Structure formats: C-alpha cells, structure tokens
Image (cartoon, rainbow, N blue to C red; front, side):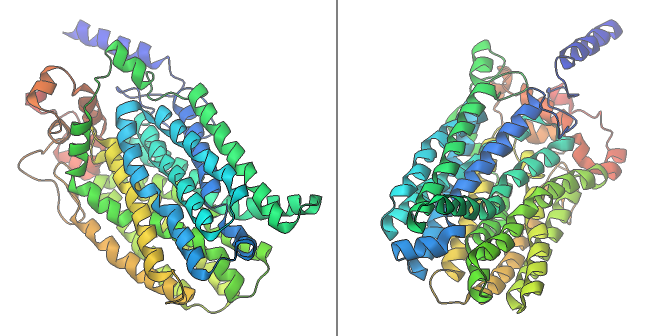
Amino acid sequence: MEVEGTRVMESNSHESRKFALPVDSDHKATEFWLFSFAKPHMRAFHLSWFSFFLCFVSTFAAPPLIPIIRDNLNLTATEIGNAGIASVSGAVFARLAMGTACDLFGPRLASASLILLTAPAVFLFSMASSPISFLLLRFFVGFSLATFVSTQFWMSSMFSPPVVGTANGVAGGWGNLGGGATQLIMPLVFSLIRDIGAAKFTAWRIAFQVPALFQMLSAFAILLFGQDMPDGNFHGLEKSGDKPKDKFSSVFWHGITNYRGWILALTYGYCFGVELTVDNIIAEYFYDRFNLKLHTAGIIAATFGLANIVSRPAGGILSDLVSKRFGMRGRLWTLWVAQTLGGVLCVILGQVGSLSASIVVMILFSVFCQGACGLTFGVVPFVSRRSLGVISGMTGGGGNVGAVLTQLIFFKGSKYSKETGITLMGVMIICCTLPMTLIHFPQWGGMFFGPSSGKFTTEEDYYMSEWSSKEKENGFHHASMKFAENSRSERGKADSLTRPSDEISPTHV
C-alpha cells in the first residue's frame, strides 16, 4: 500500500511538471502569475481578459461621442436612453446561452464565435442613419458582453479554489476596464480623424472601425492560441474519453434549480448592472450638469471605468484572502459589506453639488461597486461544479437585467433628473443586496449560520448530488470529486480544526 501511494505521488509529480505553474490534483493552477504568458493557464487569462476588454470598448464606444452622434442623427433624450438600455439588454439571454455553451463546447469556441458574430455590427455603425438603426446596432453589439461569462468560466476552469477569486477578479476587472478606456479612446480617435480632414459627422463613423477591427482580431487569437482546460480542448478530451460529454438538459436543470445562483444574479444586477448603467450615463451627466467640454467630461467619466484596473481585482484578491481564515462565510460577508457601502456612496453621489466633490465620491463609489463584482465571482465558482457555466451565465445575465431595469426606471426620458436617478439607484443597491443573507452552503454555512448537521455535510456530498447513480457508475463524477477535494479550504481555519481537511465521505471512497 505504501509503495502504491509512492507511485501515485510520483505520477502526480511527473504530470505536474508539464505545467509552468504549480497545479492541484485537477491540474488547475494553485498560484496566479500575473506577468506570465505560460501555456495553458496564464495564456488563457490574457486571451480572455483582453478579448473581453475589446468587446467592452465596442459596446460603450458610443456614449463618449453621444453629443456628436445626437446632433447628427437628431436623437432625443428618450432615444438616447432607449439605445443605452438596448446596449445592455441584448446580453441578458446571450449570457445565459453563453454559460450553457461553455459547459457543452468549452469557453474557447463559445467566446470566439460570439466575438465574430458581433463584430460586423460594430463595423456597420458607419452606416447608421436614424435613431432606429442606431438603437439596433447598440443592441446587437451589446451581445458581445456575454464574453464575460466565458472569461469567468475559463478562469474557473484553469485556477484552483484558493486563487480562483483572484483570477476571476483580475480577468473581469481588466476586461471591464474597456468601459473606462473607451471614454478616452473614442474621443481621441474621433479627434485624430477629424484633424486629418474628415467632417465631424463623418469622423465619428470612421472611428467605429477601429474597435471593430481589434475585436475581430481577438477572436482569431483565441482560436489559434487558446485552450479550454489545463489538459486540452473540450472536443479532444471528449474524443479521448478523458471528459464525458454532458447532456444539455442535465447541465441546465442543475443550474436553474440552485437557488444560490438566482440570488447572486439579483445582487450582481446591483453591482455590475449599476456599473453598466453608469458607463452609459456618466459622461453625459458631467457634460450637462457641470457645463464641461466633451473631452473633459470623457476624461472624468473614464476614471469610473478605469478604476477596474485595481478595484475589481482587489475584490477577487480580498475574497481569496478572507477565505483563508473565514472560508466561504468570509467571502459572503465581505461581498455584502462592500456592495452595501457602494450603495451608500451612490446615494451621496446624487446629492453632491460641486464638481470636485462629485469626482471624489464617484471614484470611491466605483471602487466599492466594482470590488463587489470581483467578490461576487469569488463565490460563483463554488455554487455548482457540473453547471458552472449556467450559474456564471445566470449571474452575468442578472447584471444586465439590473442595468436594463435601472435605466428604464431612473434614466429613461426626463421623469427624473440624472442626480435624482443616481440617488434612487443607490437606495436600490442597498435593498437588493439584502437577499445575500439567505445564501447558505450546507458544507460551509452562510452569513449567519454555520454548516448543516444533516444531509450534504461534506464537499463530496454537495457536489456529488448533481450526478445520478448511473452517471456515477460510469465515472462521470470524477471531476466533481477532484473539485470537492480542492475546495475544502472554504471551511475556514476554525472549521478545519473541527473537521480535518483529509476527511472524506466513506460512501465516495
């Protein structure tokens, strides 16, 4: 028995050596090397965040140029609001579909396909001639935001539980950075084209060709250099028998029947959904309220999105740090506190009347709002192993639903001034974050109650419950078993003392 154990250890050590990063038993990276491009873990990281960044740039390329576009197309305030809603509503169902596609076909094919399907709509902005065509193009380009789901799925497939929050936070944050970067990029590209000699109503149309081209190139980079899992692509692994080909009905069912996914979808609607809303309104808000120049308003608005370079990654890193001591319960508490503080700052932003104070409060608001996004996806990978893509899609789609509802209620037409809308949006954040207190994992506990004493008291029990007896007989559950073993760190230090980390449910040995 001792010799057999030694052979297993030697075999695992030999397999681990083929990866540049240290890995766990599932070959997921246990460390996150930000400036490495090592295949497959860090290469997947850089391909995913950068392609998502470019999709964000394309989706929000219009808002910083709205003062020019509205004059060219004779857009009313209501039409601008409708177009903003359209830009984030398209991704609601696209994100759920993307999650399912990732579960069935892998993140590489799923993300590249969507990027290539939406790139033509970005090119076609040069032909927009009416409010309707402008709205439809913003709607179709917004589908590309569903690449967020493939980004988070990809990171959760490549990185081990102790660092998955960090990987998801940095990838999502740097991708979301596109919402701020476009506030700088598009006015600059527009100005350069106009200075070359193009009329301003022609310059903005030509400017859209730049994000369209880069978005398309990113899809080819994913197909050429990306890899779905540490050990290969979905198709190859299924063909070799190393990965079972799952059923759509089972994957979808286990995702939508997990109530934790629905709560995270709601709460994500009031961190990421609010972020999308602010990306759509903030440049126009500063331009109109404080009588600023277009370029100045764009720079100020850009700071909100650009905060993603540190704020969302900080949320993911913080989630992993508190987990080391307090486990999953620490992740949930930190998420609730950060998002609630973001709501309070949003209320204050709507009440502040001076330019300098508004900028300071907006930056603080962005840090907590985007940090909550990173903290959310420190929890999402643990909700389900079998239906990870569906849960990611539900949560991501919830973000877009929140953005649609918020813009419909507070920023469509002239019912509310933008400052009143911002204040009421803050109140909504605080209220819609409360259901987070209902999330409870039987093996780890929730915000107010510890682990359950009855059914599903171990990680193996919880993740194995997604597989039928027949599927277990065929060995389909092996990946879930490995994930269960590697997620015991979510017990936290105190719980680990009462339940040793090597405890394994006898029924699954």
